[in-house]
Amino acid sequence: MGSLQLRYKDGLWPHSLAMCYGLLGYACGWIMITNTHMATNLLGVLLLAHAMVISAFLIHECAHNTVFVVNLHNARLAAGLSWITVNCYARYEELRRKHFRHHIERADIIGFDYRRRMPYYPHLSKVMAMLEWAYIPAVEIMLHTLLLILPFRNDYYKSQRKRVLSVFTICALLFGSFYWESPRAMILYPLAYILFIMVLRFMDANQHSYDLVEAHDDTGLPGGELRDRNYEYRNTYSNPISMRYPQLNLFTLNFFYHNAHHERPTHPWYRLPALHQELYRNDHSHVLDFRTLLHAYHKYRERRAFRPVSEDMKSHTAHGPDLQGIDGISFLIPI
Image 1 (cartoon, one colour):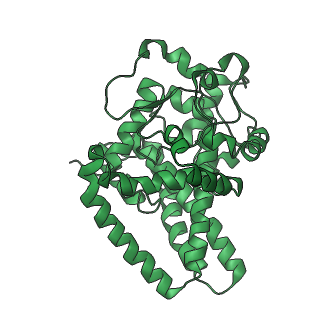
Image 2 (cartoon, one colour):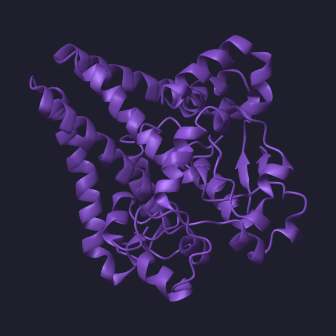
Image 3 (tube, helix red, strand yellow):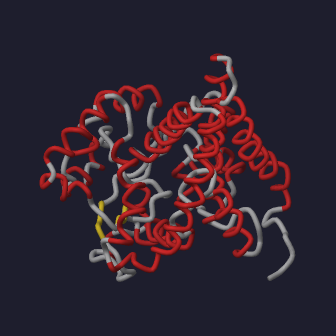
């Protein structure tokens, strides 16, 4: 199995600080939302949400094996962090497999395209549209919920039934005990979770203009010869909070430097700003303006969630990225 050894010698302090922040921030956030003071509650919500964000991107680091030398150690760390991000009911191996296909086949691969199915459920569509209008990430909440349902409705996922039941029971007991201790926490925690999901979906929405493909098995996608490295670069975008003040991008462990990440996927998060500068210098042709993206996130929040995905929408490279973006492609959702 091998000893616990970091993959990169300069990773001790960056990884340690990120992991400590994620774990301690999550614990302190829970303590703060059970407090009786409103100001402490609000700070606790923000801390809890950000601890989940950092934990999520550490899971992404583990998927690329940038933390430890031994893959099993990365997998165990990711599995532990998945309890913080509440995607522990899904197998880490499935999450990693789907994400690797995203890199290798250069497509946004999903196992369940809700867009094709929503017209058959008009009442549900209306409710979800109302929630999206109110900035509640209904799409991602639905997809996370489907991970609990699909093992009992779809034979492809039936091997996960025992895991889903076990994890659901543990989570129900934990959250029930918190509710018994502090009912207000069961109002504030969902708020923190919504903020966490909103950060992830904001980052994912415009980082690629790839084809969106529904696929269950590992069969190679048709047209793979056309999706070469040039295609990957043309359809990948970076969305930093600030190029002038790169320290702000630590808010999401530098995941905003997405072109650099796709150029060298095994490069650790703390090296990405320097890699971006090395690769692109003053070329900002694939850097999206943060303020413009915030405006687009607000303007297209309903349309982005429910419009059909067509080839025309996903092949807009001649005129730049389609800032309406796309929802439901989080690396934390292995369907």
